[in-house]
Image: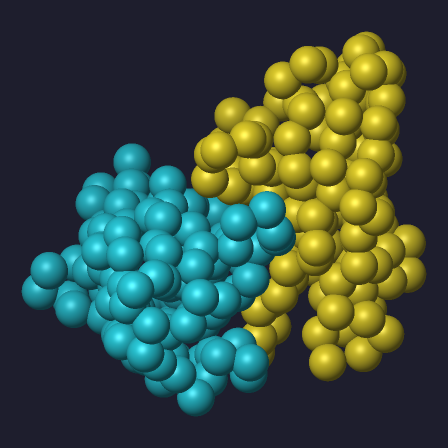
Amino acid sequence: QLVLTQSPSASASLGASVKLTCTLSSAHSRYAIAWHQQKPDKGPQFLIKINEDGSHRRGDGIPDRFSGSSSGAERYLTISSLQAEDEADYYCQTWGTLIRGFGGGTKVTVL
Amino acid sequence: QLQLQESGPGVVKPSETLSLTCTVSGGSINRVNQCWDWIRQPPGKGLEWIGTLCYSESPFYNPSLKSRVTISVDTSKNQLSLNLNSATATDTAVYYCGKDDYGNPIEHWGQGTQVTVSS
């Protein structure tokens, strides 16, 4: 069964960095993932795709403050130079043959 | 620029069928290697994948909803449709459509439409 696990919350100070983790179930540990940002009362927005080897591709217009990396079954989103507008929910998503799935989401608070 | 817009009744009665449409503009819904998705988000909760339809393939669904869901495409209208039968209060959610290219994540999202199941 495809499972993506995220911590419910994370926080960091304005201007600092925060690193979010998405852990894939063992049978799917080589899957690529994507991170999506959802601000309050808005629809999600694609941020970045991260491959098993850590290579990544940002969506159109997404600043390079958002970066991705990978280690084993874990995929990471690092937000650098944290800004007030980055306060949002972040969801990881993966896909495969006849399957899609989302993590439970991480709420990021900017202190 | 590709745009997706969901539409449908804001309120559905319990046991009835929830029917939504996603209208695609700025591109054709009928292109090789394209997939179209339905996702929902209950109040205060996370995103739940409902199902996907890829070009020239049969749709596939979340196993937890498979018995009640049908996704289809009307290429003449450039629209994606969702039917969820036997609706209950637990189907109350914001429903989103999305697009991904084969082998890639959802990169285009609609703005979402609220559906409440209530008598």
